[in-house]
Amino acid sequence: MSSKADIFYGKVLLFGEYSILFNSKGLTIPYTHFTGQLSFINDDKYTDFDFAVQSNKQLKVFLGYMLELEAKAEMPCNMDFKSLARDIENGLYFESNIPQGYGIGSSGALVASIYDRYCTNKIEANESISGLDISKLREIFSILESLFHGKSSGIDPLNCYLQHPLLIHSREDIAITGVPRSKFESEGVIFLVDTGRIGKTGPLVNHFLEQMRFKEYENIFKTEYIPWVNQCISDLLSGNMRSFFESLIKVSTFQLKHFANMIPENFMPAWQWGLDSGKFQLKLCGSGGGGFLLGFTTDYLSAKKYFSDQHLELIPVYKSA
View 1 (cartoon, rainbow, N blue to C red):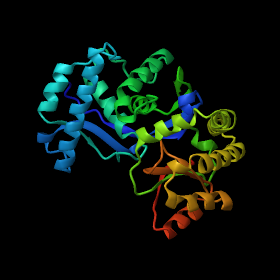
View 2 (view 1 turned 45 degrees about the vertical axis):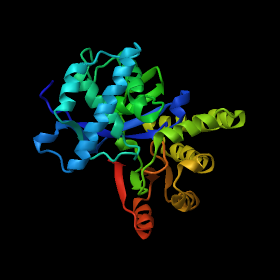
View 3 (view 1 turned 180 degrees about the horizontal axis):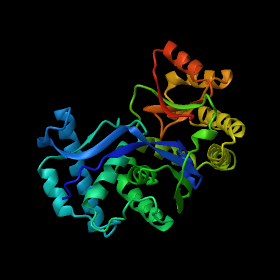
View 4 (view 1 turned 135 degrees about the horizontal axis):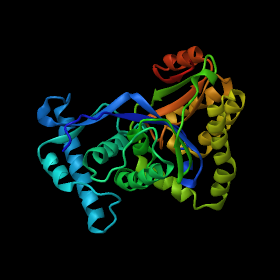
């Protein structure tokens, strides 16, 4: 077992939830406000003993899942199961303040930490990592994280592991990128708003995949929604903010209409008000159903006041330079 205490950040998927399952572009960034690291119950690092015990139990389940993959010759990397099992018995857990079920990478950070510490043939994370290695990592993480999500793209743990913004062109083409603050609107802010409830990723992803079996839904998703998502990403990275917000409004409107079951009902009026007033636009942060919603505004004070009147606090994720 390594003695180093590697810290893994949460992540925010700015664009690409659901659509990256069908080869749209995606853009994800690390979010250092939330962190997690492997620790031991007897290290006196935990703030909640019950949480530490539950986390330890979760790691036992994760170990069992990987052993099943190994038995079926489906394990995507070499894992030191003996050391992992011993450490779990000795109280290993994931000390984390990343809210679970909030769409910001709680399971991704856990998977990244286990891979980093116990994989014996791991691909090292660095800024010069090749596109081929990034693709290999995504495939590994997709399989490992599927325990938690039913079907995982692998993007969350990939972002948590590499700890750099990632531009996803497709499942096979992912690159480290940067989001230029200097080109963002002078009053522009990307923020999170807490819905106050936990989202369940697996059932929502399964529901979405069921919807995609209907040709009409599949058609509008692929011919309308995915191009708007791709345009948002291209415009944000290039600093074309007028076009960005035009496409963002379409993404937000589409989600309100076609992802309604993924949006907490009590947030639909705020979602609609933001669109009608032009003060902000909301979209899902992760799979939805609860957790955080992601907001974009060029008038942060107005957005903050609106949510303050609803007794809700905004959490800034990204501000202009």
